[in-house]
Amino acid sequence: MSEPEETFYTEERWQNWLDRVEEESLDPEDEDSARLLLNLQDDAAIAVAKIVAAYDDDDLTREEAGEEIAGIREVVLAEVDFESEEKAMLIDGVQTSLVCVFYAAEEYVVGGAAEEGSVGEYVEAAVDAEANDDVDAALGYLVQAGTRIIDGDELPMDVVEDLEYGLVSEWVNGLDSLQSAMSDPEVVEEED
Image 1: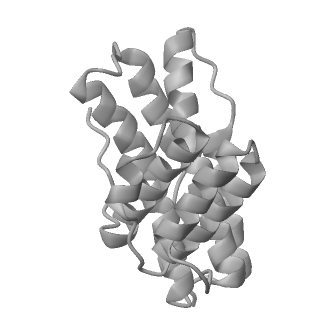
Image 2 (image 1 turned 30 degrees about the vertical axis):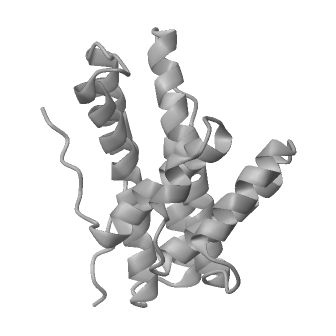
């Protein structure tokens, strides 16, 4: 008899986070509001980290891991219908950050960690690509950085701190959540 299949993430779980965001009066400058958004982001990254770990432990096949990641991506990146435009924008920021997490995990499952270049070099290449309006290349570099992070490399904080706000900084923010999730894949508890 096979083991019961683990549920890594559910639509209900994501909806619970969205309900909390909708109920709370959010101020991005407020520490509690920022923590709520970060926890929501980290929670999805932790689910991705658990899938990758299960794949690495041979508990999931490449195909199963890919399907699990795609499933979470569909749930998390679905359009959110909030009355508050500001809250919708805040969730959009979280979703944008997580795009790179999903793609990095999928790339890792399909092809393993990038073999050339350090995480810092990939981040710098992404910054250059964004400066040249090549967003696809920027994302590609950060996906490679993400595969290195999954493989145990560290995101160099000196590089991260110098990033100007933009897509690259949003995606790197997601990679930071992924790095935390890989080192400590404990579930973020939804507070009632």
